Image (spheres, rainbow, N blue to C red):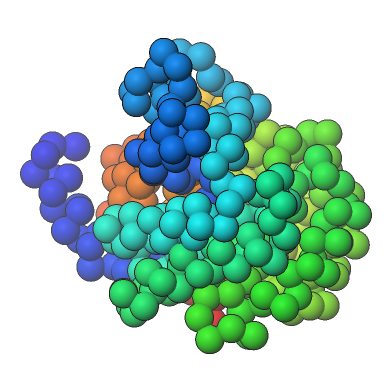
Length: 336
């Protein structure tokens, strides 16, 4: 893609009011903010400058190739996301960054339990995140926000149910501004199949929460089938292994289950070996609802516009297909 073509596409994307339905808080924090916090708490890290610190936060193609390598990048940010004020600032900045990328609808994902090591409660973690989103929303009223709460697979099904009880009062309908709009599971996939979370998803459905699930990123299409049959999701995150199962593609299309596609991170985690292997064109061909998302802007070194440019160049998408993907993002949101 030439510089002139990219400029034209960026101008076009700027007219679409993009949605990002899959962005993790702890993987999308500004490196400069984390460095400032590191200097405040630890006088930075002895013997390391900012650039060395930043490399700890980002995917390294020379060293990383699996989902577990990718998830390792989240250990450093967790040192700084244990305090209310930090979380509020981080959420505000993520919203601000998304706005400047052209995002007008942002669903931010947070697992409250991993931010409680310094004594915060689940509700305090959520309230801090919502406060940051609300503060930015007051400055940019055209920006819509919602929070998707994650239960970690490795914490087990019972912890997922406990987490759901704790977040009841933070649901969107009880707030004048941003609130909790959805429920998700994430983390190491193969050892923790969807069936373990069947009761938790049934509870989330009774609560009136919309549901998505990380699945098919590091495991086969059989786990996507299991999620579809047992968890009744509205959307699935990644779902890359669905590309090898035409019956599953038809089922996703028939049920209107949207796939949150994260091209850059799927390459980095090994979910696909080459961008040409990504099932996005198959999703479009089979009528599977799908949209583009960032996953983790800092870890992956991406933005929502970068994801669209990557798809346009890799798959030769035209304006109508790009407009379709963007419209799916807006219509597939869990926000009111």
